[in-house]
Length: 199
Image 1 (tube, one colour):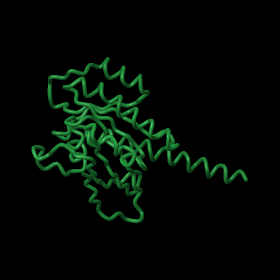
Image 2 (cartoon, one colour):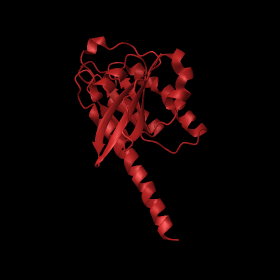
Image 3 (tube, helix red, strand yellow):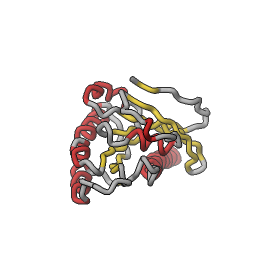
């Protein structure tokens, strides 16, 4: 099932699609809703079935940016939807539960699925971040070495620890991704202007 109710966008908005991937129950929806300000009652968050889309508008470097945050269900029966889910994606967030080492180990499937899709559809390299959720809990099973090993294996440059439940640090990974996307777009624009002026 797909929740795709989106508000009207201004024609001046820059729309950025960010994919949030990870196993069910790691708290992807809680992070997305917490960041967007829609997390009224965490107890009412249910397991995503298919795709849930959250929208948040921000002002970045003087421009209005509309983030479409696509939260993909972690269950295997929804993997057939991955092509639709990743179409037009500009950045990816891989989420694990710091109290469950298996949720980090299984992220390799999502990284492989994502990178295979991007390669097969000739996408340029996009920002990817690793996010450990449930920072509010004390019984972490994931060590610094586990995190470093995963990031090294997949050449992921940034890692964030957040608490979706308490809205702790949830803005940081989104802001980093937006920065990376807009900086890359500006660099490409500057390069095109430079080439045009050389003629």
